[in-house]
Image 1 (cartoon, helix red, strand yellow):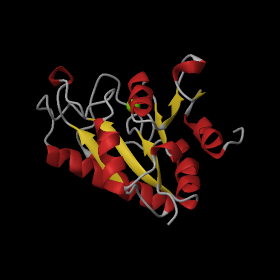
Image 2 (cartoon, protein in one colour; image 1 turned 45 degrees about the vertical axis):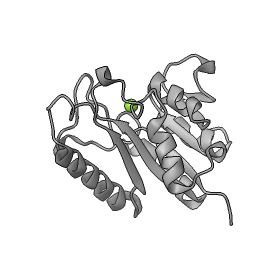
Image 3 (cartoon, protein in one colour; image 1 turned 135 degrees about the vertical axis):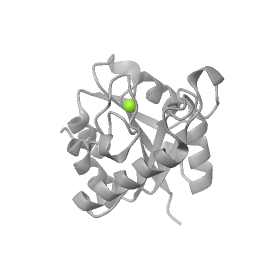
Length: 176
Ligand SMILES: [Mg+2]
């Protein structure tokens, strides 16, 4: 049996545009960043499971319910499917407040470790793409290779790329 590998993806700032200082509480607030689509196509073809790993403390704050979050994720997969014919395979969300120190919440690796166990994934063959330092920290703690999007020091992750368009080159091992 071949090794199972995953492309783990942070959600806000990777798959969709972030709402700075806010939360996406309804499907209408979800705006796809089409720059991620070539990466998703490549990863799917290369046999990576597509797994979202997202902190959503807006639920813990009472700004939305877990049903609202489910609706956003169902919408996300509809939007992705309309563009590329498929959505992500799994979504792991941590709805706890940052102050609760939930081991699932990034920068802790809990959600990644849970997914690795649930899905039988080899972390050393997998990647985690994020746009926050906490994504790279969680990825490293789970022994997953890390790609960080943004203006970060080179050593903040295995690969640092300036924007979402750089992710494909990092993943495929070729310059973008
Ligand atoms: Mg993010």
